[in-house]
Image (cartoon, rainbow, N blue to C red):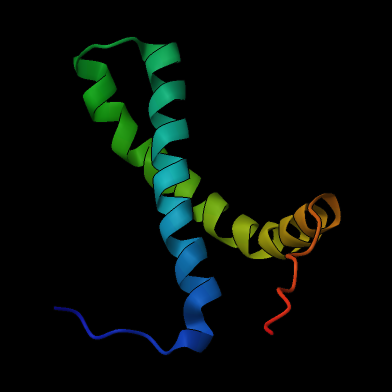
Amino acid sequence: MLPRLPHRHFGLALSFVLSIIMSGIISAVMTLVHKGLSADFVASWPPSWAFSWVVAFPSLQIALPIARRLAGALVAPPRVENSR
């Protein structure tokens, strides 16, 4: 098993994993739309994914705190239960 990062790096790890997943999905869909499901798709998708990840990872570093604040403005805070 890989060693685990300290909790203070949770945001970085979240951005890393999320950017891999999302850039893979989006690049696969867009490559499929433009190339179709062919042998060219298999050759074109990995470089497209790699390039899109290079854009996605730093973009998430910037966008995730903004998205958290916006979502926080849309959602009511959790109720505090009275523990009697």
